Length: 306
Image (cartoon, rainbow, N blue to C red; front, top):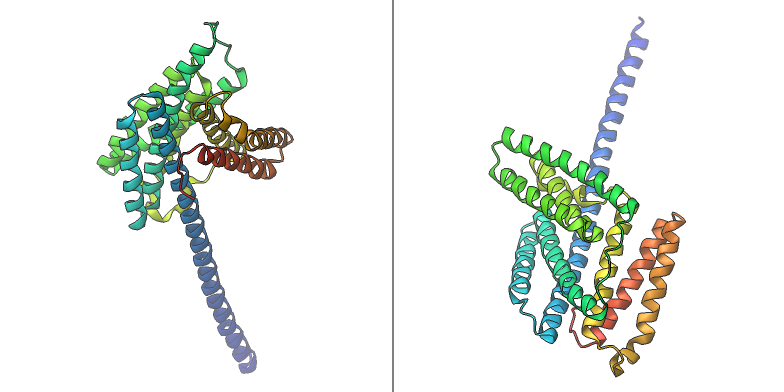
């Protein structure tokens, strides 16, 4: 090879190395931007979830006072978890913080469901239980299998790493799965809510053991459909609060009629969009419906943040 060719080749190699180095730096910068954006999204989601959980717990307390039901222990437990979640978030432990909020949210939601049952029973004579929706049961079975697989993986990884927190979480998940099975025969949505909570906890602990708190994408939903079902449940929880806070036929109910009609219409629109697989639009619409229910709860006299 002639000297000129050698020099040209050397220059090309050096230039190529420089380009690759620049590309690596660019990739690192882009990766850092993606992580930063994801962390910002996670913090925003946490703030929204924090407000929502506080709202629900405050409404639960108000319902207990109105119905003269002592639910103070549940309310206090939820308040403690909310404070712990805030402290964890301040320490940068966003996954732990979100789990604590999910615990509090589930506690409030299930307590509200328990308060609804006596009212429904008093309003109507005893009737045979409605047959479970086969589609809901099929989805429940599929989620249970996924949760069991994750639970077994968590147990294995926790043993491999001698992680006491993971071992303890396996016991929590086992109890949640048993509670879900006990609930699903009577109320498929209640059973699914408990099972989803078990799934979420298991998923978070596995990611913690594999990669730590930096894996902020852990709590994203597996699909838009899963996210919509979650928002349906959240919307329904707020809807159920209304008759507990606003007496039927009262002047306050008449004042809130416009807000409640808008909430119901938006929910119907959202469900129709979801059936057409327009899930982005459905998520936006159902969020607007939930906001209307929250507004009604505020106007009913429950002082909610925001």
